[in-house]
Image (cartoon, rainbow, N blue to C red; front, side, top):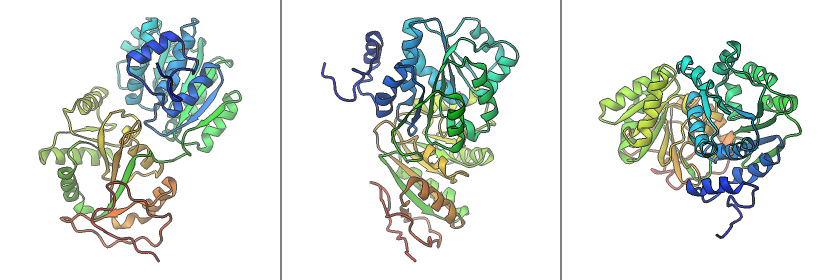
Length: 402
């Protein structure tokens, strides 16, 4: 077989795992996998900075399983959300099961007694959210003394969610000679602090500059009055016929827009913190299967959704934190595919748009819909040269320079 520069060959992966990878039809190693796997296999600590949707999960699953297949130790994967924990587990079992390595998912919103039963089966890979793991540690249902590999996935998101005290407690509860792999989309000072305190000379791998928006995603901005947003959304949903991920700022707003979409005749589901774990799983699985064309979500889903073929991400509301724009739009255009990001902005959000543009280092092209009146909003300056995506800028709503 021809071995290209970015295949899984020549990375130090064991032949049996290569067979599994081939069986799963993973033919190309993505850049984060190609760079991180050899480092992790050498038992070095690692900091991997890469956008969402770039294959980070297999970048740590493959070397972790290869190590565990050679000893009786354990691994712990910490993630920020329940959805991400379930998706990491879905990937992990594909590689771990052929070696008889069991996994367990420890997350809030799921019955604890079932998780305690799973722990009794001696799983060697634990995938957990920090809060539930701390609960189980305090109940003495989990001991971390055999953890030889600790993975912090979406570390910046965990810190944004206020999990730093729990993360530090967990780090102190694991053996000091463990291997630590930290993956993140950005590199805030809090991660630098954790790496300095708890990691051993980590090798730094950065696939894209911290905060970089995913390549292959075109951007589009509509400026409308707040009361016109639903009308514009309805028009856009007749224009884009594929699967749509729709982000709202609040859970109440998400409930309202999901209800409005269903009243319009669209197949729509919702994910937010007021939904139970089973409801969130049903919504996500239904979205994956095509049962729902539209999934309305708060930022709880910005990094917890791994669905192939999302045609567009629509920001019905801009995120509170400009960096979350990068994570939201990373749900489309994943793993080398193209995608489109649309944002509905009110005239008073000029500063919010500028903050996003500073992070992604490009200007968001402004469009005007032929059937919905735009608001009179012009930005005071252009921060970066205009970059129109393949679909951006329809309607010729031009930006003025001052």
